Image (cartoon, rainbow, N blue to C red; front, side):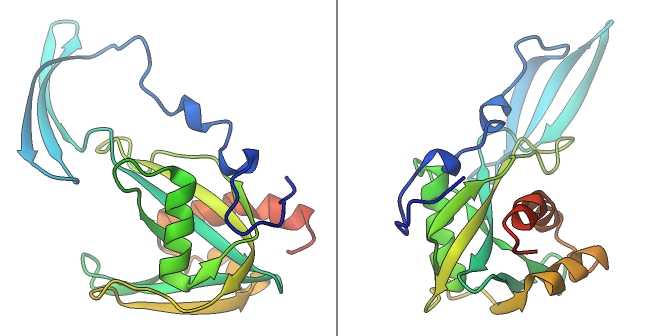
Length: 207
């Protein structure tokens, strides 16, 4: 997994082998009888009437497949990690997170990661490594999250949205993982991104 030195060049490390597996199964034990959209828009919520087999029928409310988001752990050329402290209104709290954001319609995953890295922490990466994708809330949502490790990151000016309340924090990697182990990284996808990154960071002597 060696970079080519170009800050924004794609390579085979910008996708992960498990990403193509994040699709519906061919055989389905339940079958949709009727579907109704309750909340329209990019965060759509639907209510389905479902044949659950064995003569059983029920209703299921959920977010359908379609929405995607990326998560990025940035590592500077000096080997430090970059986290953000972001205010989250539903929690009424500010929490530690990695760089993250939604994938826009028609946008490639790596392009979204490049964009969010620049916007949230002013970062440009020298190398990208894709990590395993995952379903964050499979019981109620079809959204898929795609994490990345960004290496050799140079930091510049951020480009936050007007309503975002974000603080960029550059820390030694052992301190970041101490936060993780102490249970202070309360955002689940950020924790999993850090967990998946750990082996690669250790292999490269960065942690």
